[in-house]
Image 1 (cartoon, rainbow, N blue to C red):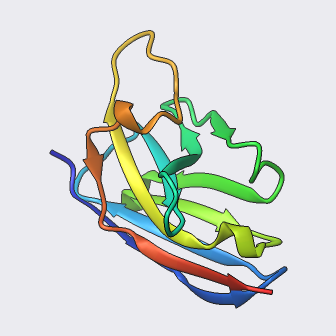
Image 2: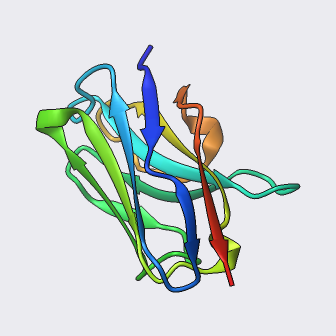
Length: 126
């Protein structure tokens, strides 16, 4: 199993930026799709962004144009750059890994992901 540790959360005002990081225990670029999810209090966990082995990214409509997912393979680290943050972006943010094989399509469905970090809290005030 892949061990994942998130960092970079914090409190910012609306319009501000944060960059989240997720360090993996192993090199994931060749065999995994990596994704960010978030969960607001009292809400279901939702997919935010996913990146596949070819570094193609997909985003939830609510964050498209504001968030950018990327990875640094030399550091086994996944990032989520979050700009123009809004109060509705508040929540616990989780990194997740999905082992994939030929033909797999990236997804923001949490049930597809086997390995999860413990999360990092993001709070955006108005």
